[in-house]
Amino acid sequence: MKYVFYILCCLTILSCKDKDKPNVLWITIEDTSPQFIGSFGNENASTPVIDKLAKEGVRFTNAFSTGTVCSASRSTIITGARTFRTGTGHQRSQYPIPNYIKGFSYYLKQLGYYTTNNSKTDYNIANEREFIKEAWDESSNKATWKDRQEGQPFFSVFNFAESHQSRTMSWSFKQYVKHVWNHLPEEDRIADNAFEMPPFYNDTPEMRKQFARVYNSIKLTDNRIGELLQKLKDDGLKDDTIIFFYGDHGEGIPRGKTNGINLGYRVPFIVWFPEKYKHLSPWKTGEVSEELISFEDLGPSMIDLLGGEVPEHMKGKKLFSGNSNDKNELLLLSTDRVDNGLDLVRSVTDGKYIYSRNYMPFIPEVRYINYLEIADITKHMRKDLKDGKLNALQSGIFNERPYEVLYDIENDIWEANNLAGNPKYKSIVDNMRQFMDAELLKAKDIMFMPEYEMAKISEKQTPYEYRLKTSEYNFDEIYKVASLSGKKGKDITKAQIAYLKHKNAMVRYWASIGLMSQDKASLQSYQKQLNKSLLDNYPPVSITISALLYQKFDKNNKAIEVLNKYCKSSNQDWQLSLMSINYMLYFKDRKPFETAVVELLERPNLKGHVKSACHDFINSQKIKNTI
Image (cartoon, rainbow, N blue to C red):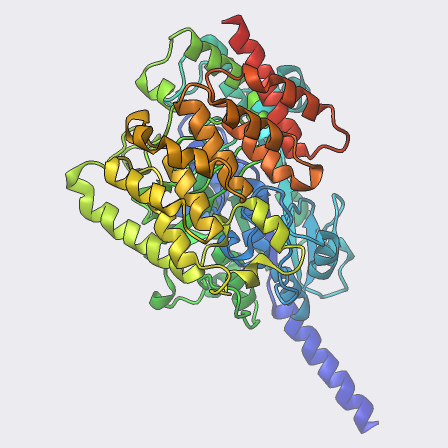
């Protein structure tokens, strides 16, 4: 009887302990920048539910996604590990990660929490189904807190897609009307003339009709959040639940989402504490925090807040520790390939300024990404560009980028004025550049590896672990050459040409990437060496040098042959096809490649990213042929 009594006492104590644990509700909205939320300063927005959360909670003005597209940002959120360590930066690449890296919610389950996800995953890793099963008690579009055991605390995520890029731009206007406009009461609908246009868009009736979709989609999202919070209150749970609200990355519009600038990274972020758990908050009710936070901090902060031990692979800060040493002074951010659009940008911010290093600057901000190209707003922009109706800022987003930019994001929220070349800001640029270099070298950024190589590595081991093998992945040497990319002049060209003979294939690759930014005059005396490198046995080098020779030197026939060959690579080597077509998309004369692209598009089981690039080539080529 004493033994039974002891067991009952223990169970009672554990039950009481569980009841003392807070519930946690995460409200995630898609593709939204704080510039479009009322409580973050937009007087044209109608977001009363979000604004009330901000007034009663803590509003963070310097919260940043660690990527600029959903799968990359969600990879960091769920694992607590940065994409340039795990190799998960390319959208929907799904390369393997080590078995010991688990979703942060797995650790909450070990603490007795009932974990649910409703319902987006998109974690961008191999074996995602098994990973999800281990991380969540339930992950579906019906998941909620209701099926937990009596007295069991919950951690629940609700993801709202009403603000997604599909609604704000990529779906047809008819679909937008059906899924957004028709779900808004008449008094909630925001008219085409009821807001200010960002200055990098041409302010025309056609553009306003499309851009109003952003405001109406966010308004519908706000309504949906209100319904969820009412459900929480009706279930008698609000007084026991800490509420988080945030967007998964920047606004889903041209020049926002997918771009390595503030508009791609910065997100709205709010935390609301019920009276019962206000003691867990280092901040006061209604406080506005300028603390720098990123998605790398979310996993370790949740585990720490709820009483767990943070795993070694999670390097983020514990936001609720109240420890002044546990604060970020600078944040390193990153963006890589998005769908069929190649890119590699690394950025640093202190909240007031953002510095971005474009390692493929020959690709413009509004680059060919099929999900953007099918949108009416992008079509209007390209037509206005063709008709000469855009000013320097508006047309500039279609041009080659500077290799580095610095924006004052407090006073220039639309990032119109690049300060990187201004001597007044030299110390800021130098400090951020040095921080970025040191952090990337320490992390051994695996995303500098061509994706063609990463796919092959992933057949035998994880990119996360491979990057640590200095004898195989000599990142110091690779980064030294990659850091020349975008810089111009005879001395830089000479060094890049010399690196084309390096024994390390990835060093040669970055030498070829860097040469893409050099002008014809700088390359003129090196044609013999370039023609040799055109036949390099490492395909990413051969493809890039072929693109360079075709673009700079009167349509080199051998270059045409090489590009067409790699364009039609096997489905297994789809990365080579994608690379080839991406270069072709920016050629003035694409006619020599039309047949190869059409033949590729007819191939069965073609990789989605490659298919998207083919469609961009064909559709834009039709437009070119009518000019």
